[in-house]
Each structure stands twice: as structure tokens, then as C-alpha cells.
Image (cartoon, rainbow, N blue to C red):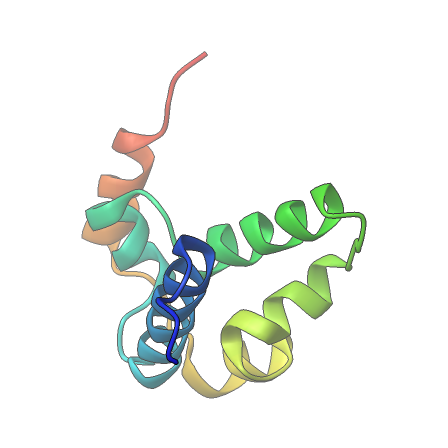
Amino acid sequence: MDRAPTTTELEAAAFRRLRDHLRERTDVQNIDLMNLAGFCRNCLSNWYAEASAEAGRPIGKEEAREIVYGMPYDEWRARHQREASAEAQATFDASKPHD
């Protein structure tokens, strides 16, 4: 008899799909994600590391980034990251919370 997937299993599947989608869309820069959605690949990897720590299985920042990026962060940056346009940087700066 088949069992229905749990909420956690469904959420995990959705996370994996988002992770894989972001790995494939290397043309979309983190600053673009931040400007449009308020989060980026680095945010996602930070959330992963925080969840891991809360579960009692802490991992480091670089390991979490490799899980999200699919390769070491420095390698991804060298292959795919480009300089942000002045417009993208201005949008990012304007959207930051001010103290």
C-alpha cells in the first residue's frame, strides 16, 4: 500500500527543485534575485546551514554553499558571476533596510 508523502517530504522536494533550478540558471545573478525576490543563493545556503544547526547537525558556510551552488562557491563565482550593473547595484542599495 502506498503512503501519502509527508509535508516535510513535499517541502524537501520543493527545495531540491528550487536548488536545481538555481543551479541551472547561472545567467541569473544573485543581485538580480535579491532585487526581485529579496533573497539569493547565499541566503538559501545560510538558511540551510541554520536549519542544519537547529537539527543538531551543523555544517559550515562553505559546505552549505556547495550544496546550493552544486560546486565550491569560489568556482561558481569564477565561472558565472559578473560585475553588477550600476542600475542593479543602485536598486540593491535602495532596497537595503536603513538603520
